[in-house]
Length: 56
Image 1 (tube, rainbow, N blue to C red):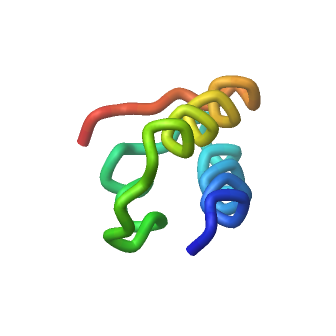
Image 2 (cartoon, rainbow, N blue to C red; image 1 turned 90 degrees about the horizontal axis):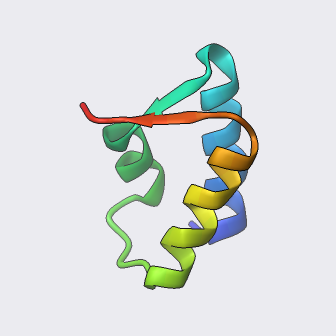
Protein backbone atom coordinates (compact mmCIF):
# COMPACT_ATOMS: atom_id res chain seq x y z
CA UNK A 1 0.00 0.00 0.00
CA UNK A 2 1.31 3.47 -0.77
CA UNK A 3 1.89 6.07 1.92
CA UNK A 4 -1.00 8.43 0.99
CA UNK A 5 -3.39 5.47 1.20
CA UNK A 6 -1.97 4.45 4.60
CA UNK A 7 -2.46 8.02 5.81
CA UNK A 8 -6.02 8.19 4.51
CA UNK A 9 -7.02 4.90 6.11
CA UNK A 10 -5.20 5.64 9.37
CA UNK A 11 -6.99 8.98 9.71
CA UNK A 12 -10.33 7.26 9.03
CA UNK A 13 -9.64 4.73 11.79
CA UNK A 14 -8.31 7.36 14.17
CA UNK A 15 -11.25 9.70 13.73
CA UNK A 16 -13.58 7.04 15.18
CA UNK A 17 -12.30 7.54 18.73
CA UNK A 18 -9.38 9.95 18.41
CA UNK A 19 -6.66 7.31 18.53
CA UNK A 20 -4.96 4.55 16.59
CA UNK A 21 -2.65 1.84 17.88
CA UNK A 22 0.75 0.87 16.56
CA UNK A 23 -0.72 -2.56 15.80
CA UNK A 24 -3.40 -0.99 13.60
CA UNK A 25 -0.75 1.08 11.81
CA UNK A 26 1.39 -2.00 11.22
CA UNK A 27 -1.59 -3.81 9.71
CA UNK A 28 -2.26 -0.89 7.38
CA UNK A 29 1.36 -0.93 6.21
CA UNK A 30 0.95 -4.63 5.40
CA UNK A 31 4.50 -5.54 6.35
CA UNK A 32 6.05 -3.03 3.97
CA UNK A 33 9.45 -1.61 4.81
CA UNK A 34 8.89 2.13 5.02
CA UNK A 35 11.48 4.83 4.66
CA UNK A 36 11.93 6.92 7.84
CA UNK A 37 10.59 9.95 5.94
CA UNK A 38 7.40 8.02 5.11
CA UNK A 39 6.96 7.10 8.77
CA UNK A 40 7.41 10.74 9.69
CA UNK A 41 4.77 11.76 7.10
CA UNK A 42 2.30 9.27 8.58
CA UNK A 43 2.92 10.35 12.18
CA UNK A 44 2.73 14.05 11.27
CA UNK A 45 -0.55 13.55 9.42
CA UNK A 46 -2.06 11.74 12.39
CA UNK A 47 -0.95 14.29 14.96
CA UNK A 48 -2.07 17.09 12.64
CA UNK A 49 -5.52 15.49 12.57
CA UNK A 50 -5.57 15.37 16.37
CA UNK A 51 -5.20 11.60 16.53
CA UNK A 52 -3.23 10.01 19.36
CA UNK A 53 -0.97 7.06 18.63
CA UNK A 54 -1.06 4.45 21.39
CA UNK A 55 0.94 1.38 22.22
CA UNK A 56 -0.83 -1.93 22.00
